[in-house]
Structure formats: structure tokens, C-alpha cells
Image (cartoon, rainbow, N blue to C red; front, top):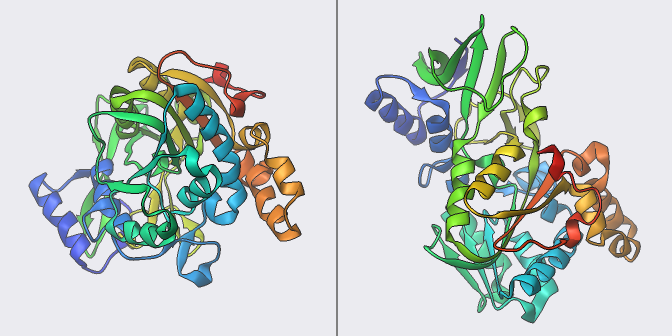
Length: 363
């Protein structure tokens, strides 16, 4: 057992109550869901700042739209093409964060967007988004859950990585599900035998920790079921299945972020920091296909942005803006780790963002 020291808080008391209801052991996905989304208390539901360029702002991490508006302006070219190709007029954004991406898309596309709908669980983030998007208030609508029917172009930047994951660990060639228990003043790991397995066999006999992503895949399947007309684009960090479950990736991918620093202990400072896991893009693609969507393409963020025309925008920008935008496409920054996957309802087309460097064959 490993212990994360934790003083009692309203959130840890909610987790304690959940532990009592389940016999003292919570699977990690339930723990992660409470730590991130417990109403008013979880990380994404509380009032901490979260998004920003620098720690001095009180933020914990930066996403591409906060780095530079060139991200949203470039993505807007793909969104516009998709709106035209699908004959739709609405944009749907999941997990809109600070509202920066929404602002960039609305400013860039103007009248091309008839309505911008944001699906976000966080009331405090909604308030920040409303302030950011005040100039477009007549077009923006907030929803707390997916409607039964949707038409339009869906975007999600760093959404899938924040969906709760289950932890699987192989020890002495036996598979266990890793869960959370109370230990003294903190939480600790406890592993229980399970029939669950990764989607592919992990070669070797060495101990191995990894994640499976039923919630993210269920989200994609539900979206596919309700998106009657349109397309969807998700940008996140992750790998195809063969890389995700590579024998050498034996420590898993769960990571926490606070004050622009990363750590690997989700059991400490619960509710005060972000918890994420990399995305298995093969699982995402299969979930979409199985539910009737067509994969438009899959590639690195760098290739997607280059295909969509970021270089001419960078050339026209200031030196400081070019430096920020370079972080989006440099391989050692966000360019390679982040990937983009696109889906379409009905007949696919040769989408702008995947014109060169499409890696769909690796999924």
C-alpha cells in the first residue's frame, strides 16, 4: 500500500461515504470521478482557476487556446469546412475550459456559426466562460448534459483525458484492478483480482500498470448515437493501442497537475489538482465506428495545424505570438504528443486537417 496524507475536507468526507457504501474499496474510476466532478467540490467543479499560461495567475496548467489565439483560428478553418460539408450551422464544444477556444472560433467564423452550444459540468467554469464570451452572448447556450439529438460540428480539446479510467495492474502474471482504500489520515492503493484485461495482450511477464477507458468510449458511442448530422474533432494527448499497451510503458499514464507542476500521486491533495490519463485513440476510433460514425482522419496536432494553414498565420504574427504558436507544432512540445481524430456522420470527405500525414492506418 502507498499512502497519500490527506486532511479531512468536505470532498474527502464524500469519498469516505462512498467507501463505506462499497465495503471500504473504490475502483479508481469512481475515486477519480469524485475527485474531479463531485458537485461544488471536485477539481473541475470548484472555484480554483485551473487554466492559464503561468503559475503566477493561480492556474495549474495551460492548454493550446490559452497559449495562442492562432490555435483556434487554425482549427476554425477545419470547423468551417466541416460546417459546409455537413450542411450545419451549429458548433458544440465539450469541456470549454476558460472559454478561450470558443471565443477564437466565434471571432473567426462570425456569421458562419448560427449557435454555439457548450456542454460543461462545471458551474464555476461556466461563469468564467460567460465573462469571456460576453460579446457573443446572443449566440452561446450552455447545457449540463447531451441532448437527445444534435446537429453540427463538435469540438473537444483536452476533454477525453479528463474522463475517469480504470486501473489494471499485472503482478506475478496475475491481473488485478487497482482501487482506493482509507489508510490512517490518507488514501492508499489496494489491488483486487479481476476478469478485466487491456484490449490487447501485453507481452512479457513483468509487472505492468495501465488503464482502460470505458467512460471515454461510452461517451463517444453516446455522441455518435445522438449526432444526427455533422462531424466531430477531438484533440488530446495519447497514442494508438499498440503504443499505449507497449510492454515498455509499464507505469501507466495517470498524471496530476497543480501550479504548472506534474506529479504521479492522485491520492494526495484530492480536489486541489487535475488528474488525467492519456487517450487510447484506437479505442476512441472503434467506439465511434461501432456506433456508426466514419473516421475522417487521425494525425499529430502538428500535422493537423500545418495542414489547416497555421504557418501563414504565424508569419503574419508578432515574434512573441510566433514563439507561442511554435509550441503547438514542435515535436518536443505539443506537436507530437497531442493527436487529432475526426469523425463524420454519413459519407466522409477528404478533410483539410488530415490532408497529409494521416495515421488512421496505425489505429
